[in-house]
Image (cartoon, rainbow, N blue to C red; front, side, top):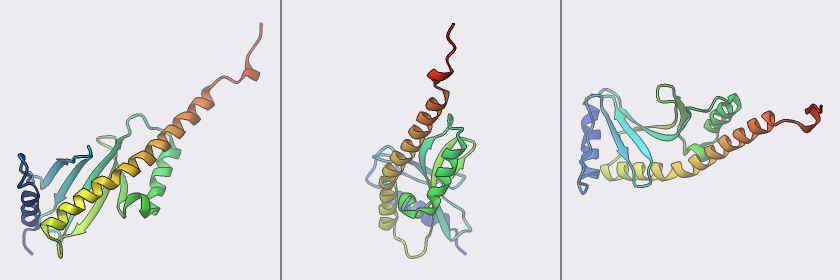
Length: 156
């Protein structure tokens, strides 16, 4: 098996050839890319794997502790229309929600690879909006639970 990261590196260089900043894999076989629509993504490959992976940052989750929010997010993995066929994951180290994809190198060109990255980064926006509504709903629910009930107020 060939070193497949060479293919990935070639694609990255081709799609960034018109850019001021050339793209390439680092020593850990990763490339971090900020897209035109402010989506952070990472492309990575294992030299001995026939697949590469794409990880897209959806949102930070530092302040999210509601188990129901996590359950709702995991349930989205069963709805490919929301995840574009990818899988949602929680990055514990960065406390963020990530959308992950894996794809074979075989049968893909640099142009198709670039189109895929563009399409995935654009598909993230509706998912980010949906996740934001989950967070907003959870926040409203918590506020309603902690709001004082007028019937429980003590009158002196």
